[in-house]
Amino acid sequence: MDWINLTALWQIVVFGLLAGAGLPALFAVGLKALSMGGRTQTAGAGGPDGDSEPMVGGNPLGIMLASVCFLIVLAAIAGGIYFIVAGS
Amino acid sequence: MNDALLALVVVTALAFDFTNGFHDTGNAMATSIATGALGPRTAVALSGVLNLVGAFLSLSVAATIASGLVDTNLVTLTVVFAGLAGGIIWNLLTWLLGIPSSSSHALIGGVIGATIAAAGGHAIKWQGLVSKVVLPAVLSPIIAILVAATGTYLVYRISRDIKAGARTHGFRIGQIGSASLVSLAHGTNDAQKTMGIITLALIANGTLHSGASAPFWVILSCAIAISLGTYLGGWRVIRTLGKGLVEIESPQGMAAEFSSAAVILLSSHFGYSLSTTHVATGSILGTGIGKKGAEVRWNVAGRMATAWLFTLPAAAITGAAGYGLANVIGGTAGVIVVFVILAAIAGFIYLRSRKTPVSHDNVNAEWTGSVEPAVPVTV
Image 1 (cartoon, each protein chain N blue to C red):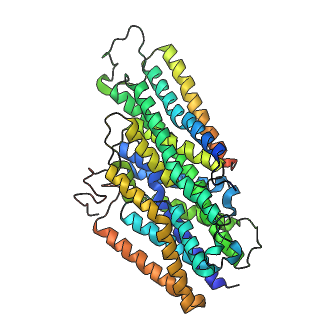
Image 2 (image 1 turned 135 degrees about the vertical axis):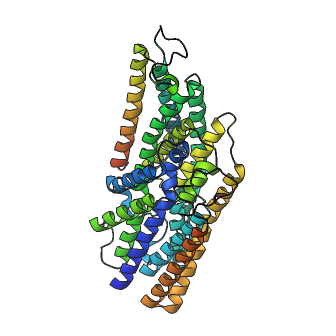
Image 3 (image 1 turned 60 degrees about the vertical axis):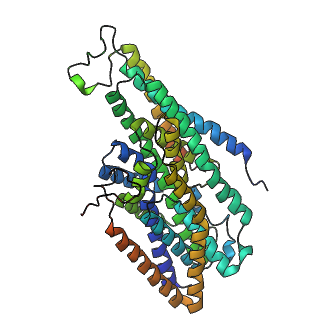
């Protein structure tokens, strides 16, 4: 006859923070890594598009790190869909 | 057994499902529309399709939302009908005012009011009402605010060195993904509520035996109704959520949708069928708090919170009044009279909304203190 399920509450808060705030943060890390420039590139060099400010900076390490971040975010979204289908 | 009455109840339930759809389009898509991640019409089309798919994804909750809240043995077709009527009227009124209130609460309030009018207060499982509906309604927006504010703070902190154009573009892509997930979850959660209500009506009519699950035609028609409603786009509510509450940039939009998706999915995992609207609104408010210097219009938030407080009792009173009237006249005739009145009220609210239309053309117009844009477009 509990009015409030505290176990569920703290789990929703903790996992909510992990997924709901952690994933956007990870996505931001991915974008930042992606935008890292190569060593020869200087700020403002921009590339052929001029002012379009490309998202990809061209640093191979950055691109790899970004891929890992984006893959984790995608996997989490897939997990969310699985959550829905499984009916939890 | 009364098939004419049953047909009327099913039509009303699908009408409610339809209002549920357009009332809640904004939950998933308001931020994407406000930041330009998706064009308004693309956004509602995508959300409509995902709601349709979502409605088929899971059927485990389709039992009924009512079973934990009212004594289902005392529920008759007229009670279900009056409850739906109460929910529809409250949904339409709040839509007219552009207030994102909970469709689930409108439905639950309507059914509870009609049940009290029919069988008295003892037919309500008050503890279930408080622990499954009222407390989650209070807690979920607070959790959503916390999660979204944290996410927004982190996102801005991490991405502050990225060039503005690249950042906006990148987060818009992330936003589309997370908003789609919210649409999917909405289709699953909310379409099932109507499926549950129609199933309840079928059981009350003796068409189905007690404990039966929703027949396929119920699933299909509910999925289509909510999807069409979503596609229509509740532009007034979208405008309030996307422009009125907080001025939103794409990183905030992405943080808000991830927060909404996480809180909704986790809560339904623990068996709380909470309001998508409350969570989405909390998340959007949270992104305003988490970003330094962002303007949060607390008066708009206050108006919303007031409407949330009134949703359950107001829908309950309307549902009770509907039952009272139908009962005084009696039988199928009584239900038909209430149905005609309901249609008249809906028509009146629709006509009123046409005076200051909000559509995909002006949904993003500058916020000037009300949901109705300063210069109304004529379509």
